[in-house]
Image 1 (cartoon, rainbow, N blue to C red):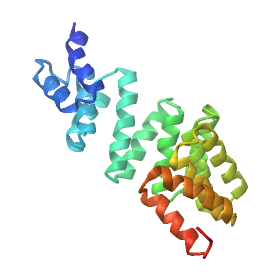
Image 2 (cartoon, one colour):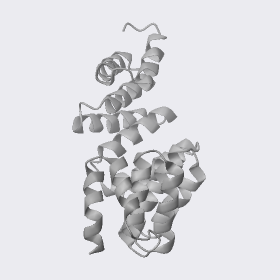
Image 3 (cartoon, one colour):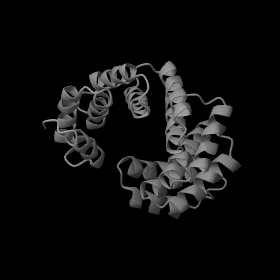
Length: 226
């Protein structure tokens, strides 16, 4: 019955009407401390509205007061996201470690781990995490792209970096992020004609990405023709 009580709010949330969903959830005569699904959706709504302190309050209730393993997994993933967005990377790392130690191995968890390692300057650990993500899902375009980009940034094994980026672009040829990574990998390898080709495509699709623009400026600074 209580699950049915949450359904109108869940439908509003799924329709991206986050303010309306939040108001409905808050009006329910239920205690989030005793109802993990309610606490979870309150946390989701506050996350979407970028009210992160409020989101943390409810998501922490899920992981500390309840035993629903699926909701705990999902809540820890969102907690790690919030801590990354707010640049509290050690707290984000704690949440990911809790997931891995609990046996929750997935491409998403390893990708989150890789991002945290990257932002903390631990590039080798970042590569290892992405390799584990690809062991679980060899055709995960996001992991392929991320691994190619990180290897290119490190300047290590640039042929391998290009290979991963090419595979990501093959899966999603309209992703400006993937095109940019491939162009950047070619740039780092000194293959400027190919770099120009893919960076131009990335610029056309992104229409204003600061990252793509920065990479194109790096290419132009070498006096390579645009």
